Image (cartoon, rainbow, N blue to C red; front, side, top):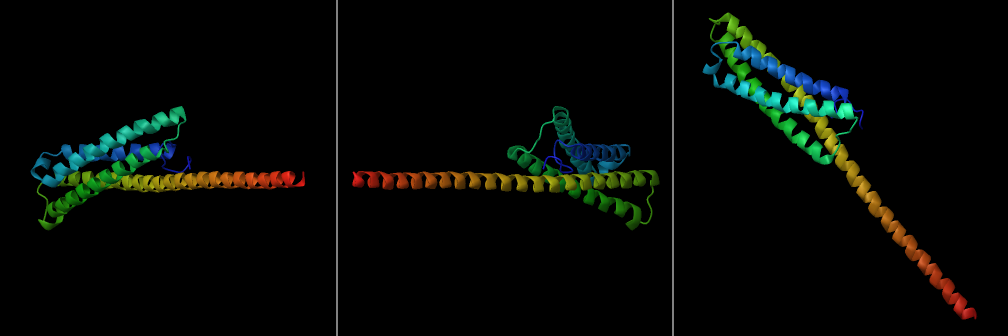
Length: 192
């Protein structure tokens, strides 16, 4: 399970987190180099969402790098549950922001006839495309984390049930041994 692609503490997990960071930073850079992005609420929301994505992904990038250097596994169920929730929240926010911004970009570029500020419209489109790339990598990460979390819980449940079954079997064996010992003891007292 440790070498599963995209898992925390692996090279592919680090690459996923780093690509999330780079795409989100590129989206913010493309959007903030325009002069009128603040006139649209969806563009401002895209910047806020990508900012949150950068903070989340960069923190987990550092954690993955630390785990790689120290050769540690990050498959603790508490950590995995935190990763699952954080990834799903950022994935949903990123998708909503990218979709809303794509709607405004389509409105500017196609529905209004022509874009009077062509250079800025191209930057809007580039920002939206990078936001979707960031969302895709986040969605991949969140699905991997959900799968790992479910697998870790299943293994923990199976291990706990196995331990309970083993202790029950040992108790039965102990009772059987005591039962046979009692029978032998009774036979010994009856013969003498």
